[in-house]
Length: 173
Image (cartoon, rainbow, N blue to C red):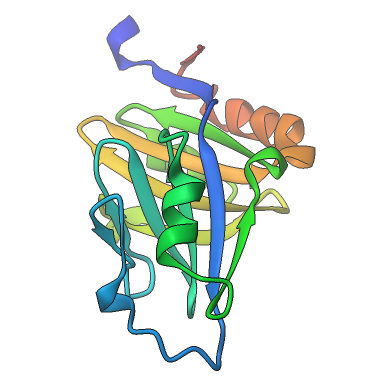
C-alpha cells in the first residue's frame, strides 16, 4: 500500500544557526527568547513553533533551524557577541527528512542509539554508517525525523538511508 511507504526528501530553504554561550557569560538564558521560544536547558530537548526549532546540541550550545529569513537579525538582537558565538552553518549542513511509520526502524539499522524510547521534541547526535549526524524527532503521527548531516557527506548519507529503507519501501520526494 502506497500510504505505508516511507517518504524521504531533502528539506531546503532553512536557516541553520549554531549558538554557543561563552563560559564567562553571565546572561541568564531564561531572559532570552528567539521567535517566542526559550533555549532548551535539558539535554536532548527541542523547543519549537511553526517556523523555528531550537535543538539542545551540547552544554551551552544550540542549533536554531528556521524558515524565518530574518532569524539572524532576531538572534543578533537577543544574543550579543560578548556573550555568544553565533555562526550561520546553513550552507554546510543537509537536512534529510524521513517520514513514515517505520522511520525509527530505518535508523536502527546503522545507528547505535536506542530509538525505542525516543520521543517527539527530542534530538540526539550520533553516527549512521560512520557519518556523524543529528536526529530531530519532529512528529510521531506519522514518525517524522529530520536528519542533519554535513553537506559534504549528504549524498553518501542519503544513499545509506535509502538502502536501509528498502525493506520497508520508500518514495523519494
